[in-house]
Length: 206
Image (cartoon, rainbow, N blue to C red; front, side, top):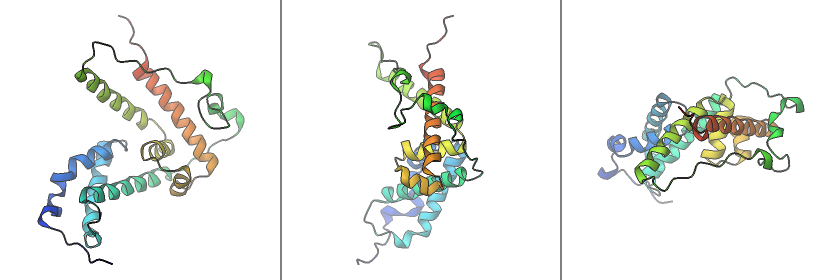
């Protein structure tokens, strides 16, 4: 085994905040519900990285190493959030509205319930307009995610943002397979309705 690579002046931990702080914060903010939580996760990342500095081998860049730590912090955050408290889900057919929207065989949208098409960019839209719309969409998506229950938000972020396998999410959050899929479906339904109301719906004529 090769010896540990000692920090060089170019990888001074005192420069982590200046070099990586904004990028780590934006990454965290796209995955958690509020700015305070995002800032706390980044701070925890730096503290953990400083404590583990002796184990850093230099096999990946410092940036990559810090992002790996932050992703672990995000997963830990959602594990705590999803388990406190956990409300058992009613899986009986009469309490499963998602069955009206998803095919039981594969979990995809039923054809008659498929979400509405997104509005296409008009020919007169320039890059600034598209960038503004993207920013507005991200803000609305963030707001919609905040309205999910703690369990739904945890499952949605870990599955569709972090792209963890279902088996890993169940293990991380202590979920049964049945509860996991119900949470996924209900999160998708909530976000669909929220986005259709706040983003896709045509503005009311004056």
